[in-house]
Image (cartoon, rainbow, N blue to C red; front, side, top):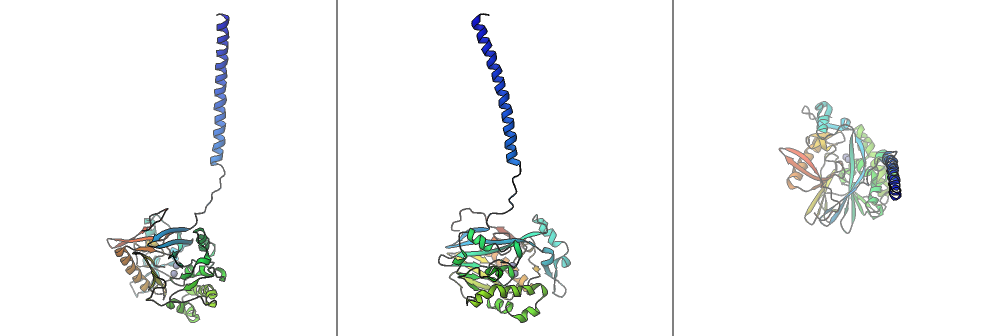
Length: 353
Ligand SMILES: [Zn+2]
Ligand SMILES: [Zn+2]
């Protein structure tokens, strides 16, 4: 080996050694980096545990509809669901008249008690007016609920912009939001409900005669409506006429004496805001005979439900429901004498439909 080969060989060995060392260093570095990044990816990121703001938009003809969530609560299925007994026509707990039915029907929808029950309301922008249908529970149901105003703001509106509030009926989870803790939440709005419900729920004599379960509703109603009554902005309606162009109340007594639907129509499109036709969809679509302990007249509520299920399925209009899983917008379908709920297809950019 001459001197030149010796030098070349020497440097070649050095480079290989250096290369090996570099490779080893790179492997070690990458391993440490991977372990570190792994640490960042899977270490203590706290769970957030909240949903996106509760609003969902759809277009109905020339109207813009915004479903608003007031929250969800553990719906007391076994306490509240009832059925009219075939003997004597009395309303009895479902678990008594049809043991196991509620749990079996829930299981068919992959649900089990406790079921989260939605409380939904609907904001209609007619182009000239902002109308809210139902208002959630306000402060009457505790911390679960009363989120309607936050969600209204998240949806791009302010409570001051609401011109009118139409209530399907005067149960706490529909009226409470007009005045949480007795304070007017919609300072420029006129509140409207059927005369029949106003007459019933605002009379002390009816409170005395009411079943125990419903007694607290009377106090909630009076406290919620007082600021609007005092301000001359509580105006009960009778049926037959539109309350605003395209929006008409329809009598649907049973759940309460003056329970109302609101028929909302624009440019050939129709949405029926049907209030409390359904409390537990997974049970009441397959078995519309299931009633709730809150029904003032359970038999009447049951026949109203059957009639509106059939009508909605036959005519195919939109439904907006207070207690179907948020946003509570969808259609009713009938197949082989059974009813189904078809929820709205999510649309990130709602346009005319
Ligand atoms: Zn109700
Ligand atoms: Zn309700």
